[in-house]
Length: 143
Image 1 (cartoon, helix red, strand yellow):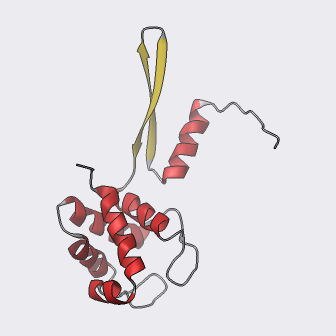
Image 2 (image 1 turned 135 degrees about the horizontal axis):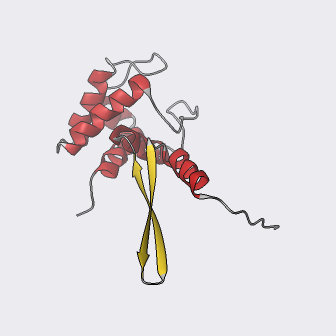
């Protein structure tokens, strides 16, 4: 295997991080400790995007019908996922938080299909319900 070494400047690194995390902004911090310098990045990501990204990873990047899920969401989808995330962050369970998403989508999926209720998901599509639980867990700090 041939390896190529490439130097990446700070602005390019910030853009790569921003794209990889679907972040709104990335800020670089350099801290000096004695003779050493440490670089860290502060990243702002909408809570709905964090939840969706965890859902997407849990689903292997595929929707229920096998089509690819986009990496970044915006518009109505981000609003619906933010509604889910807000409920999770307020201490609601994944079932009640999913209802917030469901209500925001008016029961209609992006492709026009009917969004299943939480009960229907848990009964008929437990893998998708598990992905929603993963989305909620991504917003919940570990104890």
